[in-house]
Image (cartoon, rainbow, N blue to C red; front, side, top):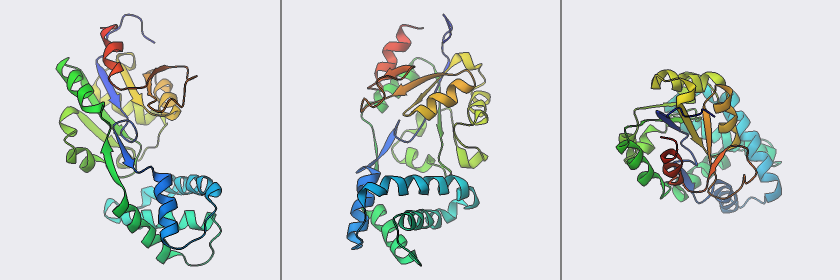
Length: 233
């Protein structure tokens, strides 16, 4: 951590830091497959979901933004195959995707706007950076959050993947600051790892108290960031 250096830039991860899917993704997948009449082993669903996430990163960059629906169909096919369903599961995957779209939505955490408003009033530069392949800008715009940010980019837009150092270095170039002048607020240890790899100070937002032993600045409410900065500026 820098000594008395003032932080000039605050970088924010997007998913599960600023916005989240409700109901939780895992819960909605279970409901979707039950809706389809598929008997699934819920204990294996987490493993299947992780396999689908790996597919998302390995293959997702091949899908243009207008083909995003096809990517999510393939995502569901990957889950179903790892759950033991063989052969052509395309119809099930399409229906599961539709169920997900109709029965879940994005929401903004209640501590986000008060924090962003206060940070802007202090003259800080704010950036939103997401590890998603396709842009979440439309979601942020729908909730009126883009007005707080000086820049934004998604990993897939620039051909990068978290926690690659180049992902975070790009943010520093856009912000025009040294790493020691920036904080990165994220919701998991990948964010911590990526920030530290380039010398950015990581801040872990841990609303569910899952990472109590994390060796970094840890907040359970985003508004606590204001108190932290108040002691540093």
